[in-house]
Length: 295
Picture 1 (cartoon, helix red, strand yellow):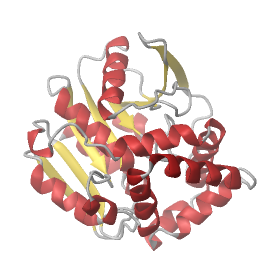
Picture 2 (cartoon, one colour):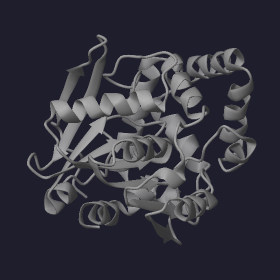
Picture 3 (cartoon, helix red, strand yellow):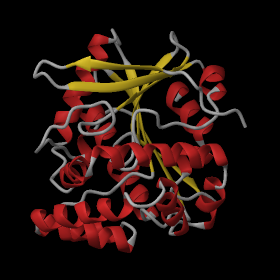
Picture 4 (cartoon, helix red, strand yellow):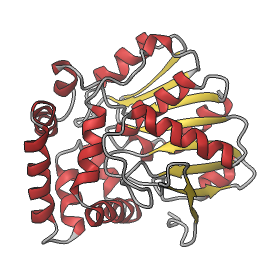
């Protein structure tokens, strides 16, 4: 399998409040634009290791760092809509009249928010292994038990949650970055473990986690806490066509999340993959993009 491109078009956009927004572009510069919202452990470089897929489909993929990730400045107290506003400003700066949005895992709520708020600009939306709303107990139970309990703790005591996350970063910083990725992979389904055995995929996930570690725990805490607040919109109010992808063997985020979203979103198009897990974004990358640009 071809490896990730050694050189990507990576830039920073200056925002009106003085912050910087990091982003990177991949694929065809004049292709169909897709803005990608990365997962909790990701960044602007999130994508399948084989960049030839983007070229073949004629896609211009734009990955964006949320505040505190990668090259983006932290914004304490930010919410989902703050991120959407940043992305829309980036779209204007890049002279994108219309584009599709793709959200993976924790990036899903941001992609949906973008589709809800700007239906005249967003042509289509796709969410893959999307997180549930975490402003009630049912949402936490839809996540992996370990992470669901940890995040629920943060919803009741922010100070304690930040302290625990800071302690974990101190502990994790004393070992190689790939060790946590291996441990995370071992908690996922067999389908995901098989996907993560691809060396190029493993390296990309390791490098993204290493960048998060260098940035420190506060930014990651900001991200998790923002996802535990009300999203600011209702799924029933989204008018843009939305592809909802989930894997039946997903142990990190229950398949029931995708099933419920497909029923609630008026133009929701369900894609249930029986043999896929949480790493569905990688195992079904080409199909996801194909549906997004031609659906």
